[in-house]
Length: 268
Length: 256
Image (cartoon, rainbow over all chains, first blue to last red; front, side, top):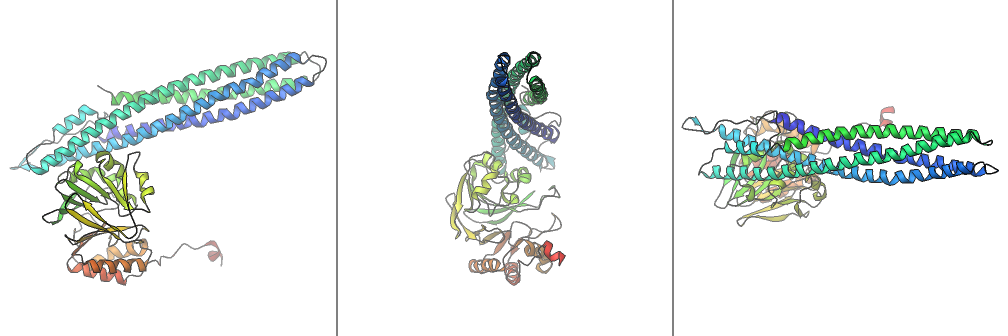
């Protein structure tokens, strides 16, 4: 029994770790958007200094750029809320998995203890073991419980009562785990959608930065400043893209793990 | 894990669960006590999370889950009560009794389960289990925990003493009851000299225990004292001077 239950709990903890990774990386996005905003404001100041109307289009472009980080910020905030919910869910799921594990262990011990009893030199029941390669679900536990001998003796009746309580709580905890895993799966899906939206905003910023670089060739004064501004924005966006790619990869891994965990508790 | 009836009377019985041959080596051995009657039970220091399945599987011979009315925690240590979430999951009707000092700390063991706490004031309190069982939470503060209680049953004349009287025995096969007090002392001494911070508190406990005149003292670790060994134990405890553990040197002292 212990095999898959123990590794299941470990996989659950991996999901929790994944959620924390996403959350940490999402927080770094906030820092990047702040940097972009400073860069864009810097561009606005420079464009305003260019004389004779040469900087007008650059001014418009730079003002566009100042708005982009404020568009990204709500998305990163939403991402952080999703991650909060995810870590909360997976922590709860982890606790439930632990409760479930202890309940299953207890059932096994009760059955094995009963199997060790004998009447007239014969064992009261055959020892029953759960599969070590599968996560035990309701049907498995019911089968295990069916191998606990009954009887009219008071200790048999008490034992039966405890077995029944364990089955009821086990089923309840398993359903709760299933529900939390499903909710976490949906939340990770929304994380993925948010990442796509942020990525699209970043792409727009990269396009505008390229346009600033092209336009800056036309002006006489502060050309270098604008070229540098465009280059810095491009670098920041590339960093953003790398960060988003990392979160996407971690999210996909989290989704894979969650799907596997859900499938195991929902074999029926 | 084994269960043994320590005492049986018309209204209730005392059980002790322990001496598990399959206990992991890295876990401190513990005695879990149960006071049970028909329809009501109090678990005294129900044990750590790692041994919960074994405790419950053995307990199932004696008690229904719906019978568990009280989970008593002498103090806050994990070997005493870290299984709390499991017990509350199965026995949501149970009330948790512990020192007022520790309820907010012990709550951390609940893992989200709703717990009904009955906090015990420093002077102790009577506890009723079901209709027929009347016991008392007896103060034993600073032995070792600053908020610490034993359980006194005047009918059974049993005093559960928690960590007082604890012995680190070499094997799960060691006798449940002390058989040779002189030999037994060596298993108690190191524990008490390190864990017990206050000679005054220990002697206060001895004074209190002598007044109760128990016929059995049940510690949370080690063997149980009965008959003449109760007197021997209390005399030994009264003679002990604790709180003298040498502290690691402070840097200045080393330099000097």
